[in-house]
Length: 424
Ligand code: PLP
Image (tube, rainbow, N blue to C red; front, side):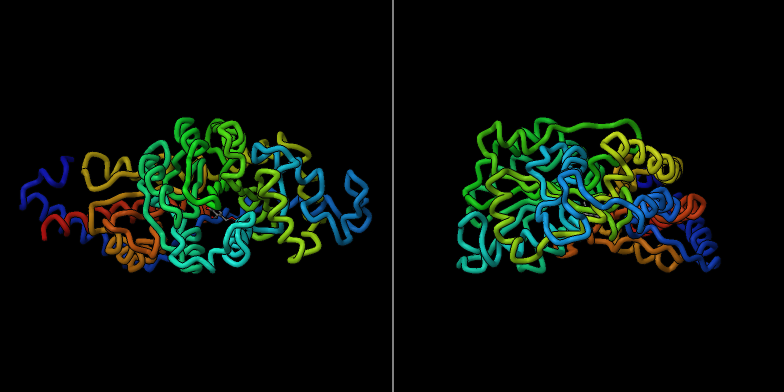
């Protein structure tokens, strides 16, 4: 089929009428499908059931350094947990703090501490005269933007390219001392699946922000979540150190989409100065996180190889779901010039970009047909997609047959809404 824009009015009207009929046939089925949230499917969760058996009432619960994991203490985590998560996050165990169950929680805490107490002796952000500003590569992760919005931080959109954020824009904006941070998901970004290039990472390491307390929030949530072969990126912490800016970055990671979201372990890796600054504040917050869960994870995986083998099993379960969506989009939308979509090599999302002014209508029509999608605009700060064109597709949660059907409906709706828009 030729591009919609090249069709005559009669041709496009005929296409539109046919699409209306097939859309109605989906509505009449009263379906209840979901392509909204990036959660693992229950078959993925089953992969980690064995972890619940590695510790029981008969287990020795002593850590490698003699710590009794049942008791208080060990603020930055058990040595073997720091090693496991350090290896996963490409960091020296000594640079790691193992926290509780959520990396998003660590990011929130980091911003809350910066707001109330300041970063390494700098003025707490709550005492600054002007607004705090933050760089937000877009499209991006809605919950990142949710944190910065909650703190009243002024968010600035930074365009995302195929190799990472627009670094010319980043370098220009960090000259403003009010800019205190940037959200980054360097591997298989949410939602674009973008992997930052070596050049982009090098430019990040060489950033010269005006604010001494500017930090890169490097959320490597999908560091070992490959769908195909492993893709490695340079370690930002090492690069920052070599560039003479050792304190520029906080790295985050967790096992949420490796074992159990909500019951995994999360970590932060950073320079010795930053780590000291954080622990000095954190010691007032907790006497130590859940070390039994740390032990459980270490004993279940053994080492980084154990983690990687486990991730291959995840990939085998979710790869067909990604491929089903991509196949349908290629077959049904290819050549029509009504949208583009990503073919990620890892992570949890496919990012779809339709014609300007269509995303809200597409998501609304999907809902009417019984398919819940992530809200249009969610991938932008303040839920404001300036083009109303981006939609995040999350293929992992539903079973394969449901995701395939949802993708078919999505393709039909994209065509219907695009034709309607072009005819208007
Ligand atoms: N960071 C990114 C980029 C995510 O996509 C998600 C979950 O979807 C999280 C963090 C949440 O991580 P956690 O469960 O460790 O809080």
